[in-house]
Each structure stands twice: as structure tokens, then as C-alpha cells.
Amino acid sequence: MATRRARCSKCGRAILVPIELENYGYSTSITMICSGCNSQGFSQQPNYPFLNNNNAPPPPAYGRRQSWPQTPMAPQYSMTPPSPYGNKRAVLFGISYGSHANSLKGSLNDVHSMKYFLTQKLGFPTDSIRMLTDEPGERNPMRIPTKYNMRMAMRWLVEGCQPGDSLVLHFSGHGSREVDYSMDEVDGYDEAICPVDYESEGKILDDEINATIVRPLPHGSKLHAVIDTCFSGTVLDLPFMCRVNRKGYYGWEDHRNPRAAYKGTRGGLAVCISACDDDGSAADTSVSTSNSNSNVDASLSPATDLCDLKCNYPLIQGFDWFILGL
Image 1 (spheres, helix red, strand yellow):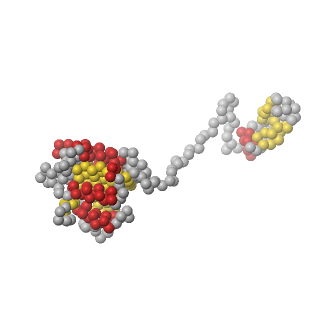
Image 2 (cartoon, rainbow, N blue to C red; image 1 turned 60 degrees about the vertical axis):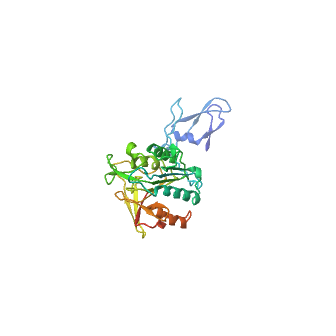
Image 3 (cartoon, rainbow, N blue to C red; image 1 turned 45 degrees about the horizontal axis):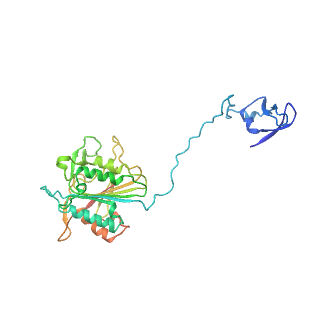
């Protein structure tokens, strides 16, 4: 602290006066305690007109503690990148609707193929994958893809999600469209997936899927969804959609609705690969003499066999185009 020399008005002893006190704007004197005579001495303050300006703070009120306005602090953001070794989780739904007239042959093969790919190619622990199917031999009631069980599984997928986590959602089954009463869809329809009990319990709309697994994603987390069903183009209700054909041509579309709430993540990355457009249909296809698969999974198979962790979306081939949502 800078000081100046002054003299006690009682005993004449030299006193060091902090220069900062002069900035308070006193015009006559400063009261100090003299260490020589132990009394209050009055030190004449020299007149420094240039210190007494409008920018100087006012003198503190008597008996009150001096309070200075606090400077607002800028938000602090962590510059540490998310860990590449986060948790891995996956939820796989495969529904054949065996008792229905429009049963599917390839859905069960799809989820088994996806589980193999995740565990053998991408290093997902087996106990981090929940697979819900309507296989005839399934005895665990919690592993049957009812509407309730599917809802619980999607909540489990994002529960406690942290930066660095990698999540996968796979659905192979029937899809549908419903009239959009919330007025947040560009085309006027909500997309939906059909649980095994959809005729009695109803379908799961894209609005619910988005709110459950997309919006909670924090910065640094990733969700990859592969949705193989009819009307699946925007089934995750992501803000942006990319149409890609087999020749590599693509085009982005903005699906944000200014009249509705933003449906993006909390900073994470959400990617959805869909089998067809919102008004399109997907079909089973045979890739061998013994197995049936969906169009998307049959197209993913050669790509994922040829590449490992460096697999990239343009390698997906075998169909005219697919929908990529972000």
C-alpha cells in the first residue's frame, strides 16, 4: 500500500498516511491514531484537485461498513474434454408380432445381429445391453417389449448419463403415424413405434421418445439410434434431418418449429439412422437362405463387417437412401 509522510497535530511525530485515503475526497484533514502520544492526531491533507473527481468513490458513511458493488463474473466453462472411456449402454427392441396377421420375420434376427456387433466390434459389455423381444421362448416378463417395459428401458438408457457415455437404441418392428394435435410437426403427423401390446396399450409417440432419450443428453455424451420401421424418418424428433442416397449425395433439412419448444439435447450428440421417410415404408429382406433381416440391418451388415471403430456413415450401402437425423 502506498503512503505519504504527515505529522501528528499533537506531538509533531511523523505519521505515515495511506495515499488511498486521499481518494475519498476529504477537503481538510484525516484523523489518525498517533503511535507516539496514543491520541487522535489530525493530519492536514494536501489539496489534490485531480484526485477529487466524479469517478472517485464516495467516502464511507459513519458507523457503516464500506460496501463496493460486485463485478459480475463471467460463466466458467470446463475446458476439459469428455473422457473417451465413458460408460456404454444399449437398448435393443425386436418385435415380430407373431400372433398378428402382419407379423415380421426379420426383427428378432436384427436385434441379435446388433447385439453381436456391439459386443464384438464396439466393446459393449454384455451386461450393459438390454434386449427386449417377443421370442416364443422368452420367460422373463420384463424382457417382453410391452409399452411399459419399453418406456422403462428407454429411461434406464439415459439414467445418470455423463460426458463420455455412449448410448445405442435399436428398434426393429412396426411403425405408425398419428395426427399431430400438439402442432409441433412440420408435416402435421407424429411418428410412433408399436410395442407388442399396442392394440390395447397404445403406441409410443416421437414426442415421448424425444423427451425421454434426446433432451436429457449432457455435453460430451452420444446417442446413436437405428430405427428400422415404417414412417421412421423423424421418429426421434431431432431438429435437423439429412437425406443421403447410395451415391453419397445428401441434403440437410431444418425441422425446427418456431412455434414449438426446441427438441435438441442439453449439449450431447444424438444421431438417428432411419429406414425410410415419415411417409415411407420399410420391408423385410432375405440376406441368406436361412435368415431374414430388415433392409437397414442387411445394409449395415457388410459395412460393419468391413470396418471397425472407424466405421463411417457413408459406408452404409445396399438401399437407395436413408435418413440421418441430428
